[in-house]
Length: 413
Image 1: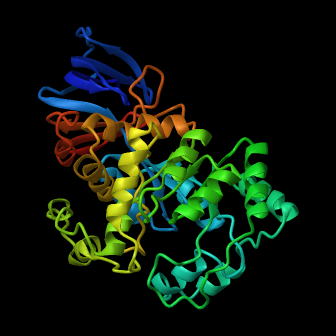
Image 2: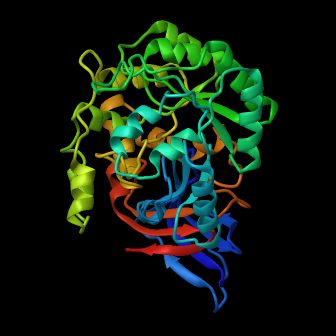
């Protein structure tokens, strides 16, 4: 593959605009040079004119569920999402999808938690028995999930997940109180706090991050006090000063997943319509524009918006993630990231630059993905070229003209 030179382009490096008219040389899958001054070119180089456009790092969705859905990672990259963080998946499915993402540049790369730290009859078995009930293998799969009850099973679980290729560990703290669904038992079983702490300790002992599912202030506080590095949803309860202070004290991050919250509450359908306009398949469009309508009375997405605005103001790192999957109506691979970022700006008071950082450099920093997430010499050439200036108008992300992964251009306008 010959070198590619992107010229005369505004460059957002993941933190800020470093040049209004710069030049980026891609070679051997990596960013080789960045300059404010034109390069001397060679005949075999591919030249891309970036005039009136902005080059940004490839976007990352910090909360998805790929399962074994190849279409998911094929679709994600069409929206500029070059990496997805898979928050619960069957080991064999993950290994299969990871192998594909290593062989092909026209799909998003996957980093995974593998199987979450589950307990018998706990989350997410309760929700999957409803959203994926048509899967004839579901009950067999659930029987094979971990049942973590003490330090010994916590240590065994983390070691097994790491050996199969997991990059981080996912905990579950969900009793079902936020969702108006007929769960078999209520509250849904959750691990004891000492068990959750044992999982976190085992993860950290193995140099792995630990993140946790939690939807209420009480659950968030339990997980933060257990020592997790991040929370994978915003709370659906009113802003709580104790939660904000504990985030600050523990230096934990949060992944809002407004995309799935909006579906759960039956809101924000109209703000998805622009992204849905180009979806040709009627079934896929209906899936994206649908709503789950499962949020219980007393909880709201407005609480989630208010919490994230308050956490941002307090200096807590916000990482873009959507909880997208083929099972969850109201989400779509890649498109939900653009919607999520729009909601950060238009519902929570983020600047466009802050929103972009949440899907690029901040995820790379907090998940220790040192080879991506920024436009820097030596990093992977996972890049997105958009018309206009998304650091001034986040809507510019809807006009993608080019996507590169590992230096190969895989999307054209």
